[in-house]
Length: 420
Image (cartoon, rainbow, N blue to C red):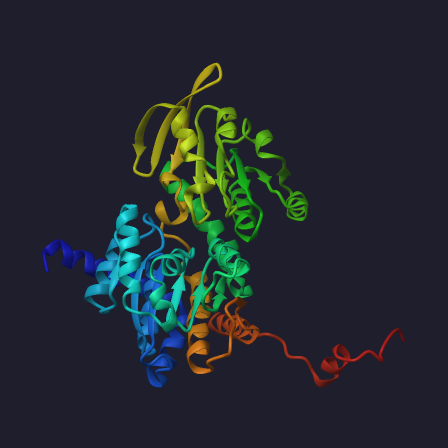
């Protein structure tokens, strides 16, 4: 290898090992699997963000006996040093490069699919969609799949409703130990991390507009508030909007929020959460960032159509000078509108991905060992796996849960006792 490649491999290996220190649950699964080999002979095709945490999952799957092929689930989330280490040190075929174009992105997905997987592992459902539209001849060999994200689950449920889903998929995102922690604490911290790294702007005293108040939006709003921001939440669901209000945030429409915001963050899973008419109303210097899976949450074509000048002002910040009614304004887009927490930072902390990827690993074991009779539907993670992950995480933190006495258990499962 060339000297630069050796340095890249060494850097990736060290960073993978560093992340592994904060992933005790995944590590304990790997230790058990090294002896039991529950995935022996299984072929797994994974389309995930190629990060240090994902590397630890891939290594664990291989330790369990699986043959793993990995590609990226977003062109700007790939960490090239991790790719180099996975290929050279851990001998896990990984097809990804940071900043790859759409053609290369989908070519890598197809390369992974040609390993003829029995289990697919997806983050956003691009791999599943490609399999269903371009390579249906491979579907008979697929036993089941898993999906990591809210966005991917939305796509898969649409496929299920249309009768298009050709094999069962377990929605990892629906696990309590995934969305309540990964989405809220992971996305909350890493999103603000990405914006701060990219812009070096002071959050305190700023007005931050958060579009979407699901688990990710809750986390982003909470962290922005913790940094001292005035937070405005834009939400289409009245119950979530009410919750945001009760959490102390202002709630309004995007049309109302557009002239007020300094920083805008989308986490809706839908298209055009911020569209052209909103951008026209924004103040000079407004910053746009997206932490949803796809960059379609921002109306980038609409922004480009208004643009009279355009330039890169920082590594992950592009300036668009637009001609709005009666004035020229500067609008700044972070990380091309792609996942800001991965494109401009390192993504979720390993400690929270430990739970998400423990679910991935244990669901793969469940699919391989118990071979459940599943229909061509989207399923939630089995509750016993979800609770096992929570228990293992608590144990790794040196904590324990209380146990009910027989008397307490009887009281909770009976109806006879009442007011005394």
